[in-house]
Length: 72
Image (cartoon, rainbow, N blue to C red; front, top):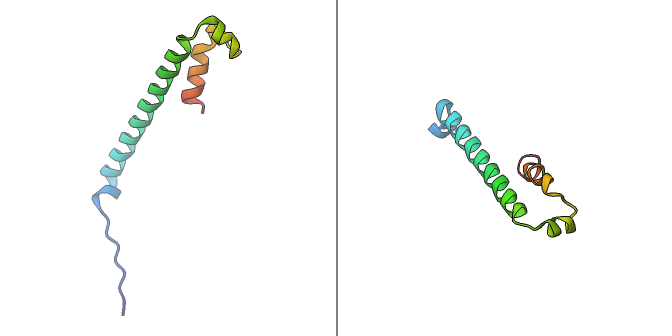
């Protein structure tokens, strides 16, 4: 005769699960912000000519960086 048991660890229960979800959310937000800042810096470092070659205007840099980080 076989018996199956289910063992619940602290990682999967109540407070620990909420804490893990919160940590994952913060990490995701930090990664998105880092991508935004990096994209903003890289596009901002380009000359107007290089931006024009990409079909972008300097005024679009923030929008493009935001889209890359938060809407992708």
